Image (tube, rainbow, N blue to C red; front, side):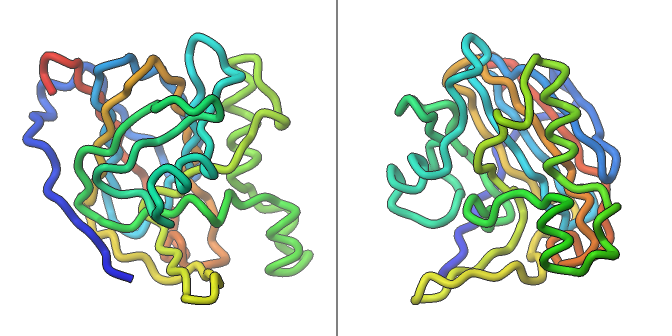
Length: 217
């Protein structure tokens, strides 16, 4: 499976309307307005960024991994991918990608999944689903509103028989992906706290979020 990388758009971080660093392991959310460009930066490399999108006008419309893969005819998210909603609308379009590998099939980690995959001693460990629950509660949403997500920068190769595995990441310090919003969207991120598989190089690290207004992008 080839990996497609494209240079990021020439955007000046100093001109960004929003600039925030999400600490390792922590959740975050923010509304990205139509026409704005959202950039996620993997500051230290090999950090999975579990991400959900909801239409800001109506949270019942939300990112659909299934519709996105069907519309693209591809198993991966990269430059040119239109991120689709469960209503069949384009939510955002990926316009630049310096990493070339983003998964939307493997889902988010949970305490329950950790226990099954890595042993009961991991039950107490914080996980992405718990981060999502904490952040979604700020917007009146609950665990039932968590849908299949995008794992930016997570390397999940898929073999010809449909099998997949989480393997060593390929993103390097400063790798980033840019998306232009087609509608006002609530972006919810769990900066993945997983330490039991190689999605974070077994060492979760911070990521940076930048947002430019339409006229600056």
